[in-house]
Image (cartoon, rainbow, N blue to C red; front, side, top):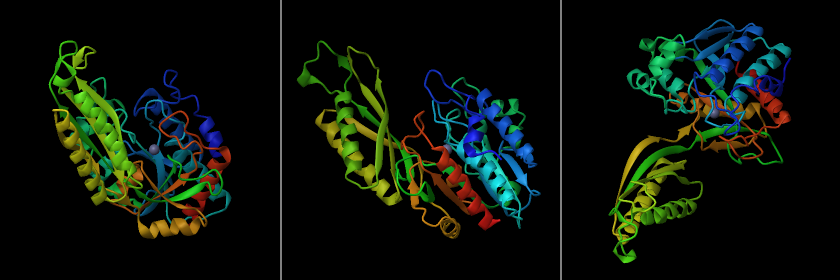
Length: 399
Ligand SMILES: [Zn+2]
């Protein structure tokens, strides 16, 4: 019987990114396909029956496929230069948990499936949790088919090249009905679990999160001939807006607001920009507060822009409301894992998409660095084993 760290060790060479460090395993790349092959082989070794559904989700069955089964799983794709645990930890833990349950002699009352979801990170086609969104109908098949990667390939073309029929994409009633309960184990992505104390937490909710675009418009001009007092420089306004974003979020406990991307137009060293676009990411557990926070930022941005002789507009690009995991399932997880703290997360997950349709819950495993989507993401071997044990405890209670 392999431990979780042994399972992860067996894929530790797949998709290493020598330029960025860590791993780059975009969906349907050679690396992600190798990991899919590894999963199918591991499932086969355990006598699990493997099938890939019409949206590209892999299912490995312990027991016959049936309605109302217990389902656990995660994803194998990564962000560029990501860590070793975001995704694969949940898949490897599910395999290890099946071993533990069999060793305990558990006789399931219903079938168990392990699932692997494609394009969870959205790092290739731009939409996170694309597999679970297609399964549930949260994204329409037409929109999914036409998503393009950086090389201009559509999701339809790439999927077809990997044996799927894009005409069959879309909400899959039969597959959805098979999920009686869904539990995803995932590496914790912040500092929610301290160095001392429990290594495992139960998920309560996923913070609502959205993206907004702020466009600051001023007067493009010559960097040498335009006197300082004559300028309407949107870069100067944007700099102050970024500080206002930071101050506004810091004043609201539990809020997170980030400007991680900024585009000055035209973007020349000797040119006062005519326009600056900046993208705002805001997260908070209550949707009304998120909305108020974004409005407050917009108001401050307007004042700042006016003072600099500029103007600003704000447009929403996407918003996902706060997800609360199924209360009854969460209680069952808490009962199976006494002493485990209950945590909200600021990261999106397939379990969060599925939660809108079927009872879903999450288990988090300690990440001592508190860093994720980066090579520094880490899980100690003992904590990984504790995670698989915790997943086995939870599954045993639900089977
Ligand atoms: Zn993940």
